[in-house]
Image (cartoon, rainbow, N blue to C red; front, side, top):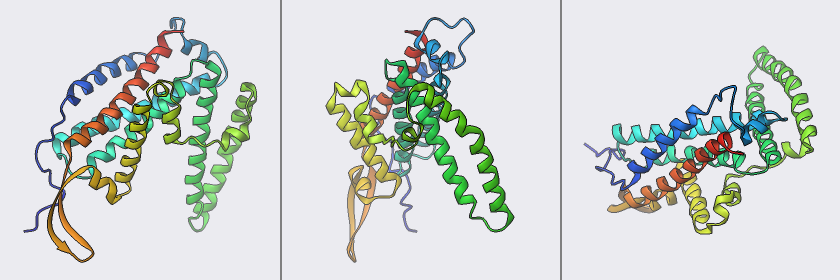
Length: 275
């Protein structure tokens, strides 16, 4: 019987990751405590944000992305325990954790409340744009189904767009400019304040994001850089190889993701408890 290429090659040496992940779990509990602040919320940046235009969008957006990052992180731990360290799948849970944590940190990281609130609105506009693209695909369904989708989309946009426009005007920014502003993960990584002072980590984080993108899209270069390879036999145009996940490479990528997630959660706590 041919060997299953998706079978785990054995135990993955994760070095200090369990301790780092435990610290993340403890910090996550603190985030959860602060998700629904009490009525007597202490004087904090969050309290000031929530009292002003689009302030709620900062914390709705950050909360959603932190939830996404942690959900995928816990799925990764469960996958490693139940399915093992196979060549492709573990990497594909690291990427959404990284991207979501970067966006959460981006919307929270500025010390300027106007910038935070503008970014919060921008996140909402991005979400609305992607929702519209999804609806436009469904509009192509034949017959009355597509027409009904179009009707519902138009009605929904008629409700929300005036709200977004009013918020943008109150913030002193152009609604059209916000709608067309690109929020690129790679660029954001370099813009985050805590990475500006550590260009080596910023470069590593960008390279990590790039390689995780490669894994998600099935690119061969990503698989080769993240694996140890043993050539089994030559074949037409190449060779048959046995690949197992490279422990050191996986630990490096997972450590980068853990650092970014930790920073995003710390920012949530900071904005919720400090001015």
